[in-house]
Structures are given as C-alpha cells and as structure tokens.
Image 1 (spheres, rainbow, N blue to C red):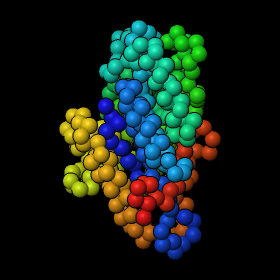
Image 2 (image 1 turned 120 degrees about the vertical axis):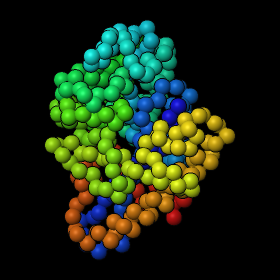
Image 3 (image 1 turned 45 degrees about the vertical axis):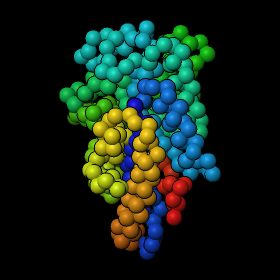
Length: 305
C-alpha cells in the first residue's frame, strides 16, 4: 500500500574547504512498512529502474518485524502492554508468503539498499518506557535472526543480522522520552522519527543522529506534506490506490526531488564558506553491510541536469 510514493529526507553535505559553488548532496530516500508482496515486487522493480544505467540511487526500507511472522505463528510476539499474538497491522500471511518477502528483502539488501527498523507491532510508543522499547527491540532482533526457525522455513534466512540494522523510524513518529536510551543500548546509529525543515542539518544528540522528516510542498500541486511515503500517498490520492495515477505521481515526485535539491543546494552553497564538516558525513556508517548514505550529484536518472 505504501509503494505509491517516495519518502524523501533531504540532508546535505558541505565539504571541508571554503568557497564551494555546488556542494555535494546527501539525499536519503525511504519507504516504511510494506506487507503486500506485489508492493515488494514494485519496489524491487522501481529500485532496478532507478539504477539501470549505473549504481546511482539507494533506498532505505524501514520494515515492521510483524511482516516476518506467519499468521499461524503469531504467538511468537508479545508487544509492550499488549496481549500475546496481537499487532496493529497484519502479520506475514502464510509461511510461503513470509519466505517470498524474505527473498525480496534479501535481493534489495544485496543490491546495496538499506534495511532499517520500524519496530514490530506498529504500536504507538509515545508513553513507553526505555524498558518497553527494549522489549520491542529484543522482539525485532529475534524476528530478524530467526525468521526461518520461527516460521518452519528451514532454508530461509535474512542476509543480515539484527546487529546490522542501525536505522529506526517509530510507528506514528511516536518518539517518547524512553526511546533514545533504548536505541543507543541496542546499537542504533540514527533515528528518523522527528520533523523539521527540508534544509535543516541533522543533529547528533546523546549519541544518536536525528535525520528529521522534512516539511515539504509537493511540486505541481503545492500541497504540504511530510517526506514520508504514506503522507505522499494521502496527499496525492487520499490513500486510494489508483493505477491510472502511477505515472503522474512518479513524474511529480521526480520533479519535486530535482527542484527541491537544486533550490536547497543553492541555499547551502551560500553558507558553505564556514569550512565545517557536515554532520551527515560524520553520520555515515562505515560498515559494508549497514546504512549507506551516498553522496549523489543527481537525484534522479531521468532529469540529472
């Protein structure tokens, strides 16, 4: 349901020397939560299309752990202050559907895209304690590390471990005071649950980088929204799936990415004489199979002007 739109968190890198006319950019694109297998196929196809003439664009997929638990195995999970076997969103369907979802995620991961966490049961954790979040992250780790045994799939496993997952977005962006201590304790390096201006710098607070979702105006329509896939979906079609609008929505997003990138780059260029290293550069993880924040001179292969 969420493949209808891109989520765009735009952060930018200013180089360490002064007088730069066009600083390089970090453009981080993310999708959060997706259950339907046909959407995973669309996401895979879209990622391949964006990179058809080179390894140019990488996405981050914030996955809900519940999608990797088959319906019949639902009692594996118990969310904080919830009854066992309950989730606010759908479980993973049949074991075969879970296996296919694992295959899609592995294919994307092996092609350089990042897999990040959207927790497990899609609960509103604004009032959760650090201990509650710890419980949710333990459940997420068990799901990632044991997806095969959990679902009776002897040959199925994810191509990464829970320790490779370093990014997080809270369901409903509900980020209570208990969240950040648990994120740090569980090895997360960044969070995208906040909201800010499109040209705002990321901040590192208590060891966790905050890459806020951007407040945007959609190119063409002027509608205000956040840089999150579901928000684009609502703004473009009131959350109604309409295949006739796919190409128009894609073109709109492409124009929005490029127009916003150029305008913000000009704004940052005017500040680039400070000679400081961008937090975005320092935030970039160094492990090969973890979050990859790539500097790109062009966001979109269709209009790389």
